[in-house]
Length: 227
Figure: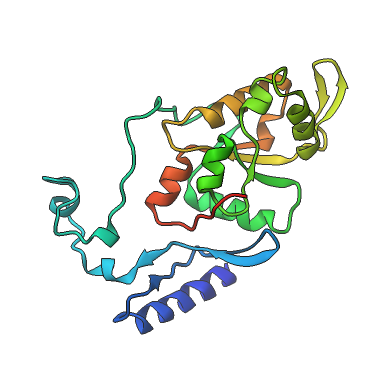
């Protein structure tokens, strides 16, 4: 709590001092992480010029959505007609996360190696853009293990799943996973959750970021190119 308060005060001071400059607005939810051996900050990256755009229904919801008067650097464009809409919850006992919970998970995972943020999308999606600290485990490695036997075995090791017999596994040391994919219309993360649950993975060790990368970008949070 004290740390959050200090960060909030510091962010406010920095914001006010940069009010007349073209800079990034800082927020109290910034998280310091080590990613690929280098320190970085996951923050809400917003052009300070956007603070002058009127926040009202006409600006954001009428006519050409948003209005042409809104500067291009304050706009985002997403494909919204793909896939199928996911429900809010998957299985009983599996928590559905929003952005703040994801940030808290990432921050805690910096000190806890039993926690892992997983990008369940195909590698080309991951390489294009992902959430910092996310590990890419494509959903089909678990969804179709017969087609990807080597990748399946590697995934078991990565998640600390012990195979004890054909189709039977020991999850006593399995990691706590937070899974995501592209958006509420993306089924890749839910397919991986289905596969894990069918294997017997404990529901309490699974978390789901329903909004995925689109929701992450929608609030201007930091992304990186996956390697």
